[in-house]
Length: 481
Image (cartoon, rainbow, N blue to C red; front, top):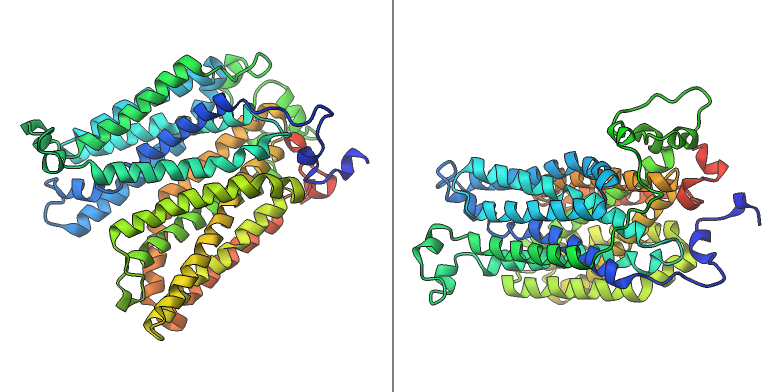
């Protein structure tokens, strides 16, 4: 079979005679720990940030002002992260992945502690911007995962990337919920006036201790993944971020081989389409989980499930365990059997019924008072959530395969993480607006917005390149998109 006839599954199914390369499980576990810490830094402040802001003089007595400022603080984190991801990737080419990871983790640890002792809005803004700046090394962390794997074993481990982040978000949320105001909850151990003055510091300290643990483990046990064949010169790195005009007749491969990696050169049509799909997936995931939280806590007379907070947390834990188990059991074999593109399209298709189930559950509760039917729909929704989570591993693998060459993989991955950070900065506010619109618009029970989003989940995936070869040498038919 000629190289031009290799389909999208070839990199996963066509293995060397020795079989799949063994995974460096210890090194991968450290990378996952670093990713988990990033999620904890994000979500550990979410449960109390609105309450924290309401204690400031600028928002005192105004719930609406506190909500607005809290939303802005969440977005500022991702804005800072988006602006710094590619620069951390570039720096890691000069000094190595491990030093950049350690530097970013130490900065994030200090930023988390400073957030807990902040007494003014300016201090809160500086702390969140700083934390996003230092956690901009998430692009480097994701690149380390790529460098620790290859096309023979990537399907065996990429399934865990999204569950690790979800697990970190649950841990972070639990820390933020359980450890605020320790002087009230644990008066024997925290009876000093210091804890009354800084009631939100303790969860920040615990989160910082988790990050500190990851620093120790990384410093002692992690091995550098930047090999001698990967680094580029300091002069080349300095020009990485400057756009370059392609010469007439000069291909992307030629442009990349000349030393400097041009962002314009690596942003080929297949890469752009893949990153656009990744951004769409991130947004739909934010929206679906926001809607799930909204409907879960909404009173039953308004069409929600009326769950109390403890039971809702239990459902979240079930989701994390269930999704991780589903990915572990089925993701590798599905990808090896059908390829990343097919599994990704199937997973994105699951957003369609998932988005429509919530308004349908509301219809059953409010109009027909069928509580049992709504609970059955909730069980179906969980299965669909497990399926949609498979899309994360698939699209990350597909983005890697679309990179113009091996050396540009980390920059393509960095661009993907940058766009994801932008979506995360804008997504919560936009998803909240859409949620309120869908509830206030009673025309067809507000299902028009859900139909539009369901169509969005189906449009972009079908344009994914069908036959990405290793490091993006695309089939001629796909290259002419």
